[in-house]
Image (cartoon, rainbow, N blue to C red):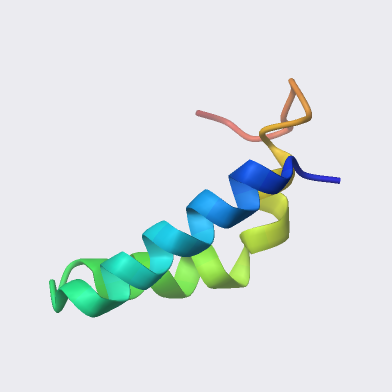
Length: 52
């Protein structure tokens, strides 16, 4: 389970990005929403199967 601060802060950032009107953030907001749980879980799990 992700740290509550990670979820709260990411939700806040997503909302700010959405409200910013910056075109480049549109896709980022979609991706962050789609992968929200996985992203926030990454704050608690010190490993990944992803290539950086």
